[in-house]
Amino acid sequence: MLHKSELFVHLIEQLQLVSPLATIARGYGIIRGSNTKVVNSVTQVSINDEINIQVTDGTIKAAVIE
Image (cartoon, rainbow, N blue to C red; front, top):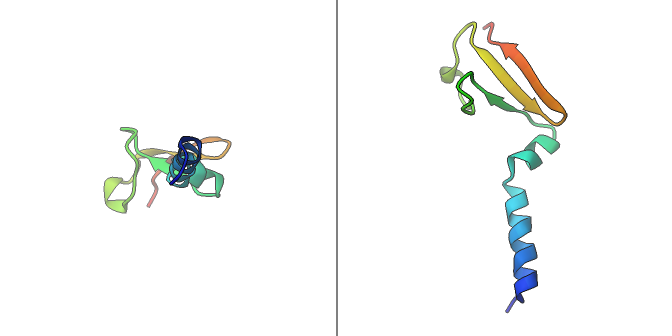
Protein backbone atom coordinates (compact mmCIF):
# COMPACT_ATOMS: atom_id res chain seq x y z
CA MET A 1 0.00 0.00 0.00
CA LEU A 2 1.27 3.47 -0.90
CA HIS A 3 2.04 5.96 1.83
CA LYS A 4 0.25 9.30 1.66
CA SER A 5 3.34 11.11 0.36
CA GLU A 6 3.88 8.51 -2.38
CA LEU A 7 0.22 8.71 -3.33
CA PHE A 8 0.44 12.50 -3.48
CA VAL A 9 3.49 12.34 -5.80
CA HIS A 10 1.70 9.78 -7.98
CA LEU A 11 -1.37 12.01 -8.28
CA ILE A 12 0.78 15.04 -9.20
CA GLU A 13 2.45 12.97 -11.94
CA GLN A 14 -0.93 11.88 -13.28
CA LEU A 15 -2.16 15.48 -13.40
CA GLN A 16 0.99 16.54 -15.23
CA LEU A 17 0.30 13.94 -17.95
CA VAL A 18 -3.02 15.56 -18.85
CA SER A 19 -1.99 19.18 -18.32
CA PRO A 20 -2.51 21.48 -21.33
CA LEU A 21 0.70 23.27 -20.35
CA ALA A 22 2.64 19.99 -20.62
CA THR A 23 1.20 19.51 -24.10
CA ILE A 24 2.34 22.99 -25.12
CA ALA A 25 5.81 22.32 -23.69
CA ARG A 26 6.09 19.30 -26.01
CA GLY A 27 5.74 21.62 -29.02
CA TYR A 28 2.02 21.70 -29.61
CA GLY A 29 -0.24 24.72 -29.57
CA ILE A 30 -3.75 25.30 -28.31
CA ILE A 31 -6.04 27.18 -30.66
CA ARG A 32 -8.89 29.24 -29.26
CA GLY A 33 -11.61 31.06 -31.12
CA SER A 34 -12.72 34.61 -30.37
CA ASN A 35 -15.09 33.17 -27.75
CA THR A 36 -11.99 31.71 -25.97
CA LYS A 37 -13.25 28.14 -26.47
CA VAL A 38 -10.73 25.59 -27.72
CA VAL A 39 -10.99 24.92 -31.46
CA ASN A 40 -10.73 21.22 -32.27
CA SER A 41 -12.49 21.11 -35.64
CA VAL A 42 -12.45 23.15 -38.85
CA THR A 43 -16.22 23.37 -38.53
CA GLN A 44 -15.77 25.68 -35.52
CA VAL A 45 -14.19 28.50 -37.53
CA SER A 46 -15.07 30.50 -40.62
CA ILE A 47 -13.12 32.63 -43.08
CA ASN A 48 -11.91 35.87 -41.42
CA ASP A 49 -12.46 34.56 -37.88
CA GLU A 50 -9.80 35.72 -35.46
CA ILE A 51 -8.07 32.96 -33.49
CA ASN A 52 -5.41 32.81 -30.78
CA ILE A 53 -2.74 30.12 -30.80
CA GLN A 54 -1.13 29.52 -27.41
CA VAL A 55 2.45 28.25 -27.64
CA THR A 56 5.24 27.82 -25.10
CA ASP A 57 6.38 31.43 -24.97
CA GLY A 58 3.20 33.36 -25.73
CA THR A 59 0.12 33.71 -27.88
CA ILE A 60 -0.09 34.20 -31.64
CA LYS A 61 -3.05 36.20 -32.92
CA ALA A 62 -4.14 35.02 -36.36
CA ALA A 63 -7.03 35.08 -38.81
CA VAL A 64 -8.56 32.19 -40.77
CA ILE A 65 -7.94 32.69 -44.48
CA GLU A 66 -9.00 29.33 -45.90
